[in-house]
Amino acid sequence: MSNLLGGLPTQEPDKIIGLMHQFAADPRPQKIDLGVGVYRTEDGKTPIMRAVKEAERRLLDQQDTKGYVALSGDPAFRAAMADLVLGPDLPADLVAALATPGGTGAVRQGLELAVRANADATVWLSAPTWPNHWSIAEAMGLPVRVYRYYDSATGQLDQSGMMADLDGARAGDIVLLHGCCHNPTGADLASQDWQSLSDLCVRRGLIPLVDLAYQGLGKGVAEDVAGLRQMSTALPEMLIAASGSKSFGLYRERVGVLLAICANPSAKQRTAETMDWLNRLNYAFPPDHGARLVTMILSDPDLRQAWESELSGMRNRLHQLRLALVQALRDETGGTDFDFIASQQGMFSLLGATPEQVVTLRETHGVYMVGDSRINVAGLTEMTIPIAAHAIAAVL
Ligand code: LMR
Image (cartoon, rainbow, N blue to C red):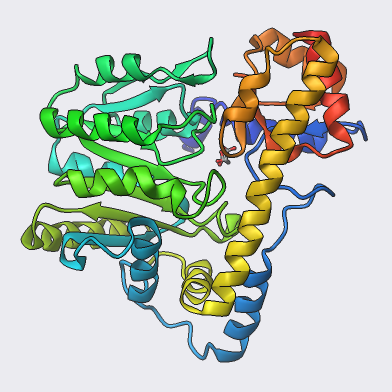
């Protein structure tokens, strides 16, 4: 009798997902979850956005078939996402779009596409980056190199380190960037940084793959893509993996799109054919339900307005939480060591704690964060900020 499966090596869980389960299993009522990156309201809920609920009601009434659409997903969804991310200026015959299961699916398909175009590509990841970028690249057997990104002394971008490291990349290499709200640091590129990076990519023939998971949660729906739009007009080729998880609160529905900007219409044609094929051989057709809701929201003026206004409320809340946490940490420590948190964007910041301190925060104080001391600011509330600040000050 065979027991091949029993011979599988043990598999370490993903750091973030493992922590999510650990938190769920913790019986302490006063525990605080600053781990997995999902948005939460003041009462700890991850809400269904109002525009999503309304779109779902309409869809329930109107939808009369669940028949297949297309391997690359609904054309209206692809067009709506391309417009949301890239704006109206890029000609449609240069942009190939593929619906994917979530932003993660788009990252994976983006890398699959890139290595089919250049089998020798090295993937450059920011130090640090979302752990799943590593997992995906390694599972695909791709050579990975890191570029400096974050200056922990300032809590900001290490611009010169990033440029110096990427200057060592070879033509055809893939540079994985974060469109906004860098995960895990919250430190973003300024407009001039996007410009210098675009120049470098052109000069060295590098292909950016921009992971865009938090559009609208940093500075604004348009502001958060200003840098990548700048880059998209400067470079002949570029890939973008956009997610509907956070911006539309559609996490489990798996809404994502891979956008490939191509050098000319015939390259676009070939790219689109390859992208279709990549969906076909992995899961045939991409999920449709969440994508359809996003299309309805983006194309109906009332739903779009409701979405943008709720998103802007979420963004403002994140900013207020950052300010309140900084104030509470000032009160606790009597210093300004954590002020950098207020200048960062999106859900995440790195506290700068050691792995041992992270364990103490979790085990002694019930404050959960990722092992690199990444906190999800959205996990805080008015009530828990003083408690978390007290614990952080005691341990750090
Ligand atoms: C995170 O970084 O916590 C989120 O993107 C959720 C995930 O899948 O890791």
